[in-house]
Amino acid sequence: MEEDQYRSVYRQLNELKCAFEKAILAGRCACPLSHKFCLAEREGITCQQAANQQRCQALLQKSREKASFVFGLIRSGNVLPHGKEIRVQLGSLSGLAELTDWPETEKISDINQLLTMAEERYQELDELPYESLIRAINQARGRQRRKPA
Image 1 (cartoon, helix red, strand yellow):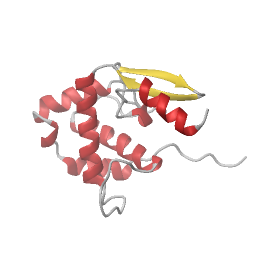
Image 2 (tube, one colour; image 1 turned 30 degrees about the vertical axis):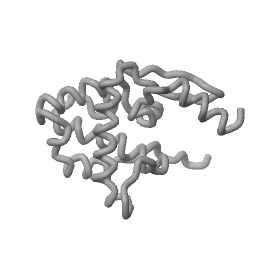
Image 3 (cartoon, helix red, strand yellow; image 1 turned 60 degrees about the horizontal axis):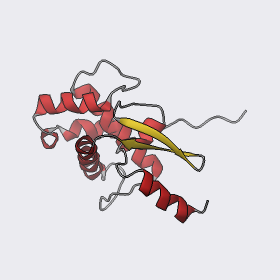
């Protein structure tokens, strides 16, 4: 399957792309509203509720904007390289977990519940102390490279 054709079919199958798709596929978090699908030997994650997908997308977009200086970016944008994007996803979730006293530290098992707890504590996502999330994003690391045998 050619890449352009793959992207076209992917967009058709994944109208509600999970904002935290990379973090979920990396096995570092989960969400009961997510659904995994396979296409051309690749995996994708779709969200099953539009309102929650928009909430996650809003948090992730705000986190990207606030973290742009961490990566030395002059202007923030919607598209980051994979390594930086996964750091934003993992870091923003781990920062939220710290802010809400989430019981799990290694793997967040319910992104939806975590965001609900954050909204209950801070009333809305715009009121979050993003400085704490930025610190967590700066400390976040994706998968560690394997050492050669």
